[in-house]
Image (tube, rainbow, N blue to C red; front, side, top):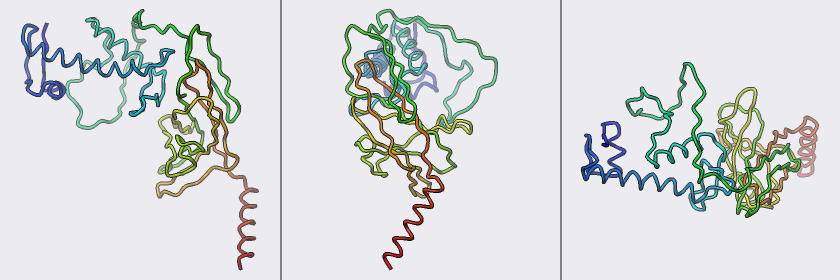
Length: 289
């Protein structure tokens, strides 16, 4: 076998072996051995991070907290498992199914999204390594409706340890305009301790005109009772709080639960409430005169 370093891949290989140049290196050469070992160690380092913080139910989170390793984002993304299968197969000297673009021949100058047009077909199903199949219970399915207590369905397991944190995904339905950002702030430190400056910014990646949802995931301690609200921050920095009451939620403390989703809708002030607030303000003005 051999390793070919092209002008496109040169930057990657130089990060691992600064003296490497473009060319094809046979497996009998020292350059081949050096590149092979460097790439293997580099890739194993990433996989070891995932292995260290993979949940007992087999879920693979997309992101981890840099300091603690606590999962921060979606934990059941299809591409996470596809990436693992690809890496495991290649690590075992098996060329896996390709999920790249065969016509791609250059690195783009800037990163940007695009669309692809054509005929799509179902991807070929890979084989999950038997020794990597989770032996504990299946991931729980937890649903909530607003501030009602969550309903959780979990399968039983012979051994289970309560996780140190739960990935709580907040989904807020609210219509916004360009320049506005929805954030969540609450009574605990991970939610900013009621300080708007430390509020958690939600993402509008799922936002559509028919489904205006802002989402975000926060790691919270099991059993914690939280109170929180959503705020709308304008491009000028002006903060608009949603109306009372505070939302309340108790983070699950089940040994088989590692993630939960909470759905809310923006609590807008009613016309009568705004009128009452205005009358109160005028009354205070008269008292101060």
